[in-house]
Image (cartoon, rainbow, N blue to C red; front, side, top):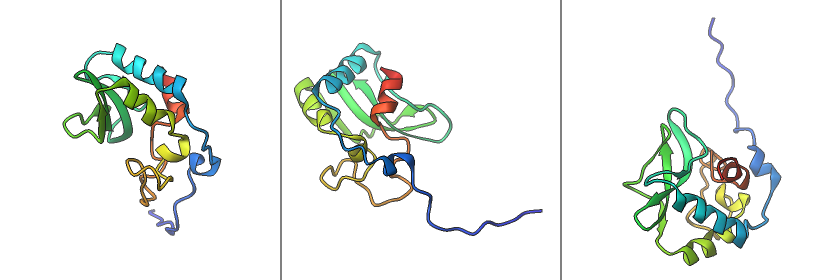
Length: 134
């Protein structure tokens, strides 16, 4: 027997409730850069590696680092969301990020901001996800 459940608004996601707006900071951003640059090409910080949509990942690309959407555990390097060839620019950008901003809630961060409830806080590069990898 098939029962159709009523559809309502999606339940709030854990990071949306946390309100963690504390910046990642310079030391953490430097650690991120160093970790990605030590990896082989197209590898880096990929916290999720399962079937279908896996969120965001940071990968080594050329002389720099690229932020990519990840599907089936593979980063879409052919269409990065952003890339940095300079460590200083990378650190400046990522040091001001927070769980709040990378999850898509901060209107002042257009790279991540979205009004799409499905995309917000959906397998994004939070501090905890990054720490699981680095």
